[in-house]
Length: 289
Image (cartoon, rainbow, N blue to C red; front, side, top):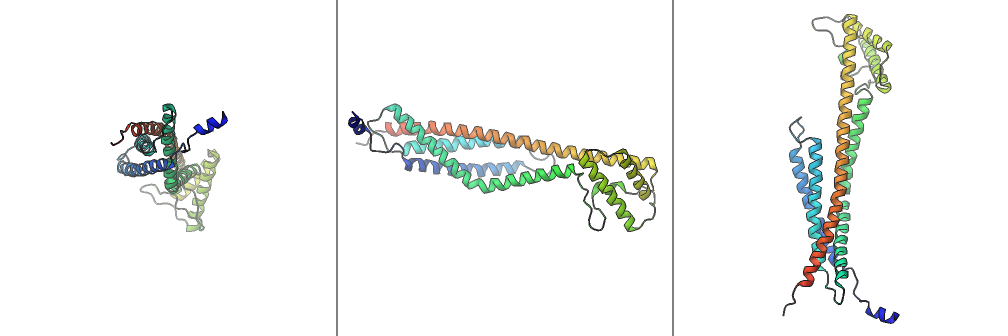
């Protein structure tokens, strides 16, 4: 009985790797072309001008839909080629032929996915690294008070610190040496930085900032205190906007990743079905007489 079973086993391999590789190359080339087209369309709708281009959410949804389209077309073409180009199996049950054809389409999809991933790994890695670095810079910059670094001479070129010591319109600030001005700015910068780290500025530090502002600008104590409050409110507003932008980017990235995974699953299914269709057409093709 064992010898009979062995004799019934076909000598031809169950997988036609020539057909699989051919289908994978076709699918990979199609994916690359469509991804480049999608990149061009994406750059066309993105604008550096505020309100002029598509929003982050719209861009993420559009990118996800395009990934589905790319997987659909490339997988269908690659799976069909893998099924159509394989050698016809003889004396084999139709169910087994159907399974092998779907397997050929799935193998072509898997190989093409690996090829495309290898091609785009460096580019995607650079984009992801840039995005993470940008998000980290924005978040850390906002959390540390946006701009509170003091240079070696004790001066500062930071916007919020400078806004504290602007002279009131129509007034002449008290005369002071450059060193005094740099010292006051440095102290203000350190107070703002400490407040950014702790999340709040103590009332004593606010009062001291108001004194510094009053001495440097000639403002009345009440006006100086109001200027301090206004600057702190502006810093909090900048922090909130930075966090909102980072959160929007995070949600868009998560949406794109989930849709990308769904697109890959759809591509695998389409490739398997296309392989079965291609194989069926190959077997039903009449032999030329």
